Length: 211
Image (cartoon, rainbow, N blue to C red; front, side, top):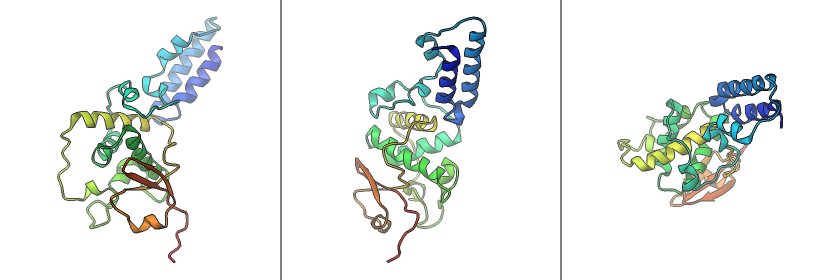
């Protein structure tokens, strides 16, 4: 494969997320510059070195602890912190797959015009209004202390992978979920798309019959 084709493939892989757009452009430029110097082929090892571990994992995410352990230590800005905290308080007791599923719901809402357009906006929607918060931990009256560092590090990696552009294929576009311990009224009108662990996932219909 020529450097030009590798450059295009690398740009597509990284620029799927705005987080990696600049890195994608720089890496692609590096490959094209190498081609101009007369190099016609590139080894897979060289290409691998240019792609961050998180970006490499976007093509295939394995929903298990072993794969997640290979993801670099999590860090990020405000949106990453909001998603990581939501996963910690809402799903830290779930499997890795269950944590990814909850992250999908939050990001599906970000993309839905019916909800705020940022992760923090989605998570904090309705907070401070009685019975109006979207995520219980934001308005249950209990202090939000993160006391389990290992659990937070894990959900922090899930948040990092999802914000880096991982595919959302677990919940089929779900925008809602609830635990099996409750049965909210809206669940009778929304189509259920998946059940993972103790959570059931639903997609909000475009029209809801009030009959």
